[in-house]
Amino acid sequence: MNTTSRPGRSVVISGASTGIGRATAVQLAAHGWHVLAGVRRLADAPLPAVGAPGSIRPLHLDVTDSDSVTDARVRVEELLQGSPLTALVNNAGIGVIAPMQTVELAALRAVWEVNVGGVVRLSQAFVPLMAAGSRLLILGSIGDRLTVPYGGPLTSSKWAVASVAEAFRLELACLGIAVTIIEPGSIHSEAVGKVEAAAAETAASISRTDPGLADRFRRAVEVAVANERDGSDPAVVASAISRALDSHRPRTRILVGKHARLMAMAAAVLPDSSLDRIRLRLFRQPPAQVS
Image 1: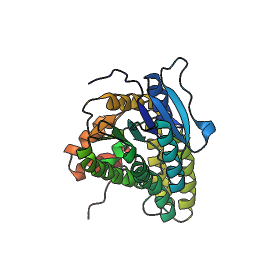
Image 2: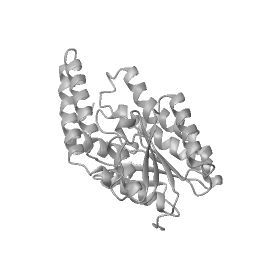
Image 3: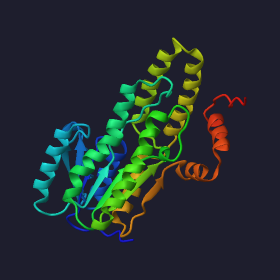
């Protein structure tokens, strides 16, 4: 693995205002990268650490808006002045916890539009600016290998993202563009509070028609939120992204963060029935009824 800093390396990062995206932007700038930090509000863009050899330039970017993505691509092309884009990090994403029994289709579409549509839209726009040796990174989740109770709205999108990443990997192999999906486990970021608040509203709504489901949902949310609050710092994921970008031959999948390897192993070796029992117990759900 070559981890030396190469001058002039450029990277576009979506969702760079908070969490993993922000940590990645700061860390890459510290390693000499010229970071184009995609944010919906320019004022939310991160700043490089004092003395960082690289730079961070805010880039107005809404991955759900085709015009915004097109404008961002034009801006990046102008800044590159004919040089290829070294890397694209598809980080922007949103999370929703809700029972699949009750989740509104509009809410499900919104998750998929950001998490799946955003990856496709952004990659289609920026891959033409890349060349052999460039890197396409996509933020997936350990949830692209297994689903936890009431995590379906989020993990269903991440299963799709994993397939999208594989499709890009196969298509871009002949161009010398490596594609890697990053699979974080439990990560503590600002998003945890937002997901918890939204889940509380969902539980209150469900309780009016199905108190039992609402109670089961609340118990699962408590476990999920506790796991995330006890999770790894986003900087851990940023370091994994940095290593992948520096690697001569990056892995196709990278597990990172608390619980990621354990959950991946469980998903790989356990039969569904055993894995179901473990998931139901861990998330304080009633056992399966055998008829």
